Image (cartoon, rainbow, N blue to C red; front, side, top):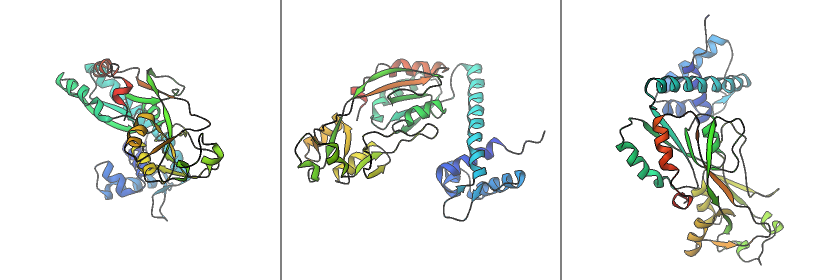
Length: 300
């Protein structure tokens, strides 16, 4: 049987789709751009189908290309899981572990844990990822991460992972001191808030449906990459929205934000530590330490 679609070619297609261009994909895969172009042209020639529309500035998948990528990602995930299982069977210790942290948490909070982990001599490489909103769950179930810290709300159906609550994060509504909503009487009504732009951190999910929160129907939205960008945009008066109480209070004390009461308060958001259920010795060691961290230690 002559298989025309290789895993390497699928990795290239996936990288181009995620990065938006052949050049950016080449950089992410540590290849020269000509190698990326060669791989794509060879695959298109082998299967007799155009995978990319090359008429614009960005590399846009054709309908056939989107279907190939959708199914191809399942194969890439399966191949990656198979490779990891084989290595775990041989040694019981992972060669690499990826840890996803919610953008609401301080990445430095886990550095002392990593110091002790390296001292144990597992030889496992650690990769830290930043995920936004539902991306923390998406990273876990798609195989991008083995451990996810700060995954919000309910986990997705399907299983394959375990989780435990870290605690609840309270959010408050905050605006810049010179914003019109800083002057209106409290509590602010939805009709008042809807007239002004909301700032939203974009969910980093690739496979799960993206989540949104705190945006009213018909409200203009400025979408930014993460919570730090959202904070900066609200301080700059570009929009309004909900921030973790601790973060908002810190900047309110500096006179950079004003916390306002709203008529319809948001509920607290439950935060979780979650992990792949079939981890090896290195993951088990890390989890024992990470489970001791509190949300107060982790939050921005």
